[in-house]
Image: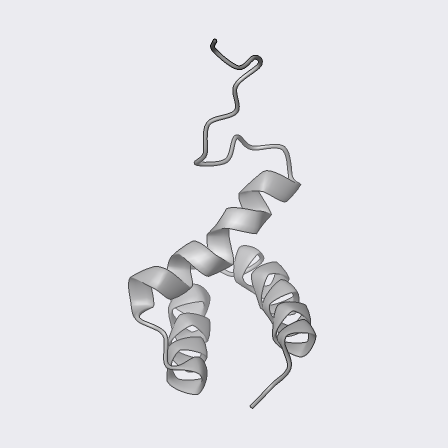
Length: 70
């Protein structure tokens, strides 16, 4: 079993590769990723897309609030 830091580092590398590929390349990389780690396809897509969007300045899928309501 891989350590968490190794898996995180590997996921970051895969995110960069995933972002730079076309549709067929993404599909192939996704198939390999799911087979190796045992993830479902939709979950793997979310893992590979979320941090890329946040890293390049595109709004992420979570809400950010300016102040706390009383």
